[in-house]
Amino acid sequence: MLRATKRFALLYALWLVLTAAEAAALLPGLVAAAAAALLARGLTRETDSALPLAPLVRLFPGFLWRGILAGIDVALRALRPEIPVARGWIRHPTRLPDGAARVVFGSTLSLAPGSLAAGSEGGMLLVHCLDTRGDPAALIAAEEDRLARAGVDG
Image 1 (cartoon, rainbow, N blue to C red):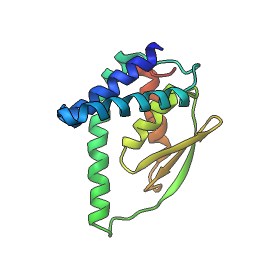
Image 2: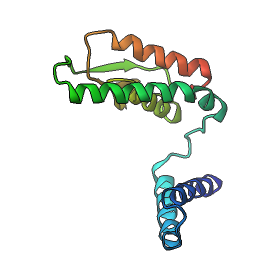
Image 3: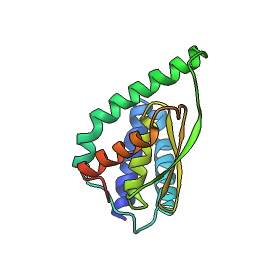
Image 4: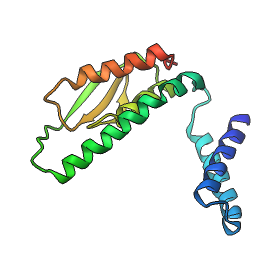
């Protein structure tokens, strides 16, 4: 129950920020945040463990920087079609357990230029890459190592 309450509070706070806490948006925000919190509760497993906040905070500057680089990369590819693209899929064997740690891993990969984590099957993370000509598998492994060193390994 505490997790659902925290989730509701976070979602409602986000709603207030996005709507500038306008009076007309308060009630719809309560309903939307409550519905989203209940839906999220139904979609998450009770066995999922919460990740410690400190490693995520330490990793945030890197997440932000890679997100900026990814945005620039995608914009350049959209504006300059002559930039070569060699799309493909990578099946990365991950040592991270299914659950919160793997979700963080997939999310950070999706911030990296030209990559998008698209799910997992068993112990494999499925990653779509815009350019497979380099060594995207090494970059994926390096990101997993970075997360594990920071303590985001479930």
